[in-house]
Image (cartoon, rainbow, N blue to C red; front, side):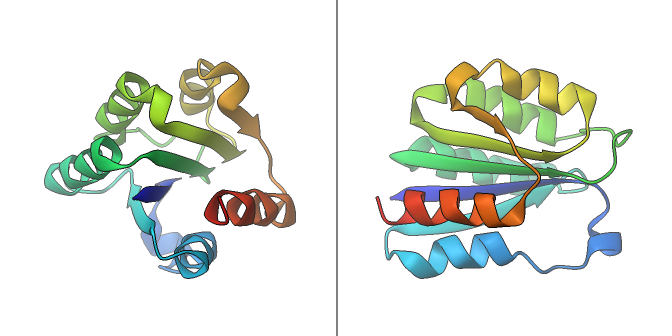
Length: 131
């Protein structure tokens, strides 16, 4: 199983619930599971996503940072878990602005990509889903 994980840093009520990249990744391959969390997600939801990360062979991480001053809350523990399992991370794509989250993700070195262009992100998602 491969995991497409989208983390949203911001208020989901401002953004709505549309997740086009998540739906794209899940639709392209039977073995790609999509999951998303945000900074307001409950701890048990974050724990379930951690289990998915542990069970996945590869994880594509997409972080959308819409609010630069938003506290990371329980997402911080998910970041910690991702670093513990970083051999499973295929790519970590960061879009937006959030200094703390970006600093954490930059430690993934060559797996980290900062990109704000949806079309390029879409191409990376397709490449991941097609294996």
